[in-house]
Image (cartoon, rainbow, N blue to C red; front, side, top):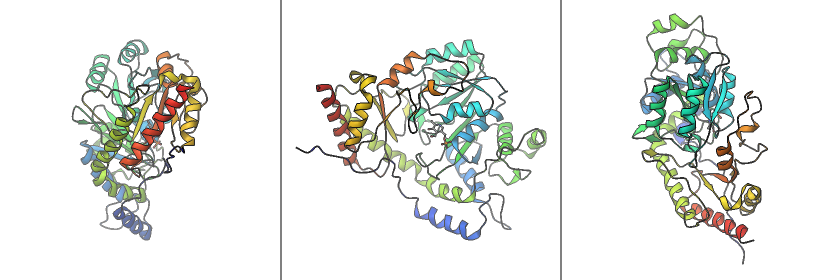
Length: 400
Ligand SMILES: Cc1ncc(COP(=O)(O)O)c(C=O)c1O
């Protein structure tokens, strides 16, 4: 009997909403793509996006810039990171996160992962005590939000400033509070595979007057910062404008126009991701060899990807399992490989981090963890088929 094969692409996004396409065409026709190039009486798309995103997020200020990674490094600089300072962050995250710390002149100090892909709170506390770090860049990796009550309490006790990497949690909440509203600054990515898609792009949000003023100037505002969408009192700029370098990383009006049209659909899209996640989760949970993450109480996540473990396979057989699923059209990523591959890399492959850390718990979790994207171009039947294929391949391999 022929085994069913899944034939849709795991990297196919939905198209940009028509309103965004129309607005983008208008921007193209105007020729005014640069955010500071405005006709008399006009407000730039980038400026409008900043206002609208800040209002949606529930934060005073928003800066639109070139990428999530750019926003992260600017966040650290604007929050006062000094060269050579340690910055705590998750060992289980994507390469742009330690990269942003390095870019801002910091030294990444990595925290263990728990069995449910959140930062390990005991290790975090230990490292807050021993590292002397003043900053914690918490990556809500793959949408897993750790206990934010515990994290904010730890930050408070140890005098650590929290910077949230919300690349995978735009639209998510913890205890009813939007992810991105817990720390001093938060950063979002609008790269193609994220919850809003402008190809590349980043958003930084904060309530802090000085942080936003510095971030705006870093992002390449020249002395045109008054044209930004959300601004503190202009006197704040007078204090810092000549001491803050321009690290050009502006968002343009074309991408801003595309994003503005997606924002009104975001809430509804988050619900659509979750429907798909739940359908796949339900299917996978029928297989006792598959371990699904337990989501913390209080977490209201966005299921745009799913992670699971098959401990019985062991790390050695993981590549075989990935290949077997791929042969049936199901694209899995494996974070456990010693060699970085595609988008994924394990923390010990970031060799530029001078202080070597051995994180056995993270290695153990990642060795048998698989990850898959859930694009909105998949429907609920697709999720059932994907779940069946994964379960089937687990059973086939373990029956050998
Ligand atoms: C967890 C995480 N943080 C940050 C980023 C950086 O975003 P960008 O690609 O927009 O620089 C990414 C991008 O993939 C990511 O996955």
